[in-house]
Image (cartoon, rainbow, N blue to C red; front, top):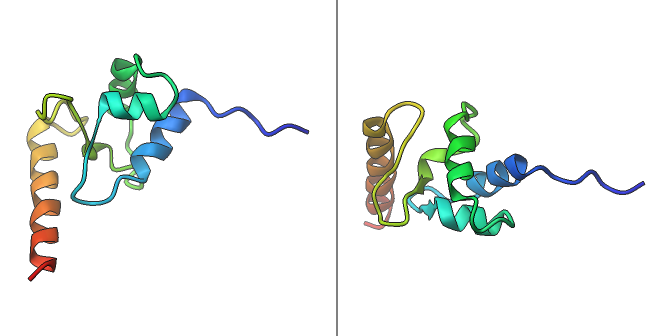
Length: 93
């Protein structure tokens, strides 16, 4: 029996879950990696519904470098990203 085809949403969540702390991908990059390069708005909509802490959707940002939306607020997204970045910097000392 053939393996079940993954949905676009499942692919997006799997890609986001693999983004290491302190790093980011753009919505466009996630869409491309999920097999639909023009579906970057769909990626944003999918991640906006995420409440699973195993999927670090805060690590997906806009192509222009701005943070973009977040279901817990853009300020919270910036705060989490900054804490991750600072944690990596401390680890380099």
